Image (cartoon, rainbow, N blue to C red; front, side):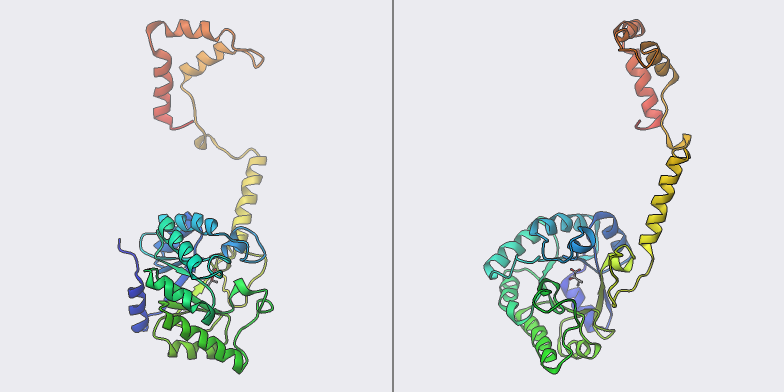
Length: 317
Ligand code: KIV
C-alpha cells in the first residue's frame, strides 16, 4: 500500500480536507491508528513523558526515538510517519542536525522528521530539506524549551509574542518545511497563521481553524493520568478500563478461576504414564529414568513419537 506523502498532505490542505495526526510509539497502537485511517503518525518525543515516565521531553535520546520509530513504521502501511528530533539532536548546528536526521530516516524508514523552533532553526530546516529530508516545524509552545519559556503556558497572547510566533511559522515555511505544528496558541492567532501559510498547519491547543489537529494518543485514550492538558479530549477512559481488567485478572488468579482447562495444555496419556513411572514421587531424583526410557524405547523412537504426536494436536506446551 502506498503511504501518504507530503504532497498528498498538501493536496488535502488545498482541498480544505482536515488532516488528523496522532502520536504513536509502539507496534500495537500504531497498527490500530493506521487501520483507523489516521494519515499522519507522529513518533513524538512526548514518548519521554507518556511512555517512559520522565517529567519533560528533555531526556529523550536519538536512540530511543529510533527504537520507537522503527516499531511504528513496521506497524503501519498507509500513514505518513514523522519522527521527532529530540532535545540536543539539532540545537548544536545544522551539521549535527543533518547527521541525526539522516540516521533517523535511514534506521526507522520514516517519511519525515519534526523539530521545534522558528526563526532560530530556519537555516537547519533549509539544510535538511536541501538534503532531501522533509521537515515538519513546530512553533508556539515548544516543550523542549519549557525551561526558558517559563512552563507550559499559552504562547502568543501579547501583540509582541503573536508577531514573533507568526514570524517563526513563516520562517519555517520559507525554509521549506512541509507543515507546521502550532501548539498552545490562541485560536485567533492560529487562524491568522493558517491563512498566511501555504503549507498545512497542525494544531494542538490552537483551536479549530488549523488545517489539521494532533493529539497525544495517551491523552485521548485516557492512558496518561498524571495530568490532563486543557486541549486534550478523552475519547475513552482507557486507563480505568485497563486497570479494571488487570484487577479482574488478579482476582481470577487468586480465586483459582484462571486458567481454565480450555486455556491449558495437556500431555498424551502414554507419555504421562511413562513420566510418572520415571518419577513416582516428588522426591525422586530421576536416577531410574534411563532404565525406564530404555525399556519403552525398545522398538526405536516410540518416546519421541508419543511426545510429538501430542504436541501437534495440542499446540505449544
Ligand atoms: O512530541 C509530541 O507528541 C508533539 C505533539 C504534542 C505535537 O510534539
